[in-house]
Structures are given as structure tokens and as C-alpha cells.
Length: 321
Image (cartoon, rainbow, N blue to C red; front, top):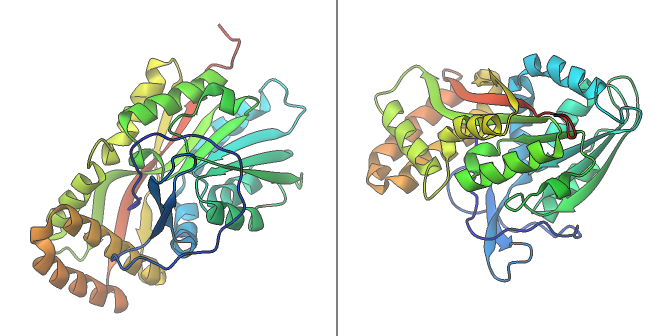
């Protein structure tokens, strides 16, 4: 699931920068967005910042949802890689506070070096402080950071990579950006584990007459401009397939109940808020809807299944015919 937005326009990968102090939270309903900061290397173009509190709140649900079924084929590929006597080098794109590394590094054997990419130095600071230190077999895990974004990612940027990872990323990309990402990963000849892409389906129990209308408006919001939103997973699978990569997809839904009430509340605010942003005429009815849903959540009566999928990409290794 992702209620985040991504800017359009030119993007570049730039050198790491020192952390900045946090800014005040936006008064927009829902999680994630803080006031904007300039995009690296783009002058006064601004990009949104995402609240670490939201990323930390969703981390346990993300960890529970990710598809363990994709790990065995990934382990086999990593065990058979050329240069396997050296560290596994992982590029984590749009790392946020580093939740992917904290989940995956302890599930893989062998020494690992993680390169954490994000455009927000404040989030990179959190990711570094909370980075895992040991692999499944006790081998060391080290991290470095790279400030930037993935819009102009090239195979050269992934030189020496053993694995590329990302979470909740594909659905905030355009078709061109997905093609660029696919070309870079396949060009580098390394596998990619891309998790938690929204697929446009939410199940709420008990049902409410407005569920579908809010869901449709949210999905349309995710597709605003050139963003792919719920269509991103299919587009990415096709892009990798055109380049000769093997693609495996597995469901990875959030399953939220009374024990996840705080997360459900924040997700609801963001979900409904995005729907109203896309369709302002829903505002009055959506306000009543949100109050009803939040009351059910507070009473422990609301259950939510937010559907995502994970994808494992296995390109041909570089140099293989």
C-alpha cells in the first residue's frame, strides 16, 4: 500500500548529504507527507518528505505481509552468483527508514553490504541508525547511503550489485520510470525483490455502502498524471519480461485487525483523504464515512485487508548468452 506521491520532472542520483532537521507535519489528513524539500540537483523544484513515524508505524505490517515464498529462489540465485566469495551487495531503492534491510538481511546468509538510496537525508539518517548488523548465519552486515532518486537510474549505478530491493515503490512510478528501472536492473544482471505494490483492491469488514466509491477514487488518485498506481505491477512484469527476465509474483496483503488499530486509523485517513483530493465532491459524505470507520476501528470492530503483491525478478546474469 502506498498513499505517497512522487514528483514529475528530472531526477538525478547525487552524492550523500548530511541529515537535516525534521520539518513540521502537514495538516493534510493521513500519513506520510511532511513539508517539501528541494529535489537534489534541481534548484527550486520540490519533492515531498515522508514522516518517519508513518514508515515506522507500518513496518510490522510490511514485515508480516512480504512474501516469504519468494525467498528460496532468491537464495538459490545469490548462492550461485559469480563472485559469491565476496559480500552480497544490495541496493535498496527508496529505502525510507530502512525497513527492507531490517526484514531481509537477517533472512539471508553471508556477509552483506547494503547501499541505501533515498532522496531525503533525514530518512537516510534513520535508516543508518537502525540498520541490521548481522545476517542469518551471524555474518556481518554493513551499510552506506546514497542520496538521490531512481528516475535516471542506469546499470552503471548498479555496478557490482548482487541484488536490488524496494518496497512500496512501483506504484508511485510512471511507465517511463519503470522502463528505466527494468533496464538498469536487467543491464546489471542482478535479481530484484520489489515488494508491497498496491493492486487496487481493499476489503473492509463490516462492509459499508461507500467502500467501493472511496476505493475507486483512491485508485484514480494513484493514477493521476502519468503515475501507474495499481497498474504498476503489470507494467513492471511486462517491462522485465520484454528484457528476457524471469518474473515471479506473489500476493503480500496487509491484514489489519484490532491489534493494528493505530495503523488502520492512519491508513484510513490517508486512503479517504486521497479519494477526496481526487474527487472533492465526496467531501461531505466522506467525512461521515471516515467518522464511522474510525469509530468502528476504535471499538475493535473493523478488519481490513489491503492487497499488495511482491515481485521477484531474475534476469540472466551479465555475460550469459
